[in-house]
Length: 250
Image 1: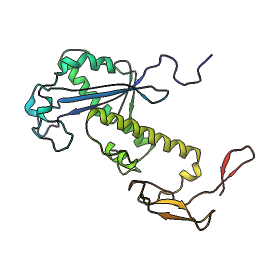
Image 2: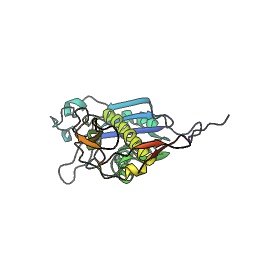
Image 3: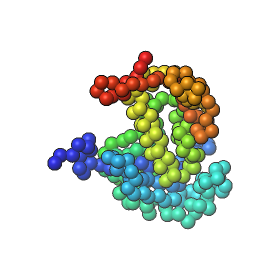
Image 4: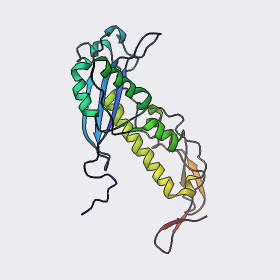
């Protein structure tokens, strides 16, 4: 019996990964990888199959701040006893090599840092079977309706909490953001007449008026929804067509 899935049996798994690094503050400084985190995801169900994360001790510990400006940030003390990159390189290679890579802004940043780190220890870098950079995909398909394309902004838009800037937490948040965006885009493709309506103020949502069960609608502030919840300026009633499909009434 043939599978109806677009992914054939044995197709590459998706690995969503993220790096935390030092941030150069003057010319001549380099990026040092401080943490690697990844989750392996089934492409058919988008469920997490496995995970791996590790702190990494850079060769130059002085490049790591003694204190972090973030509550969950990585400090010099946190990485002082962590393994060096060459000690975890084989594991990172096995996690990444031959899989579909996914992540936010990985093409411009994370992939470059991975290649640099492997080149520094004289080992071949892992090679992806494909790549999904959520920054590029969401900019093109979802747009800047959340305000900007930062992961923290997108997560807040969907009420997913604050970005922690720790690798494993961030990749799980990235996957949830992708799922939420995909759901919105799917619903909009099903109801193009509604999706073409102008967005309301993001602090309000449109609800059906209790005084009249049909057309009139009013805007109410939603206590349950985050400040970035979106709504439409008008509601479109629906009727069931002759074939049982739901159709918009204009």
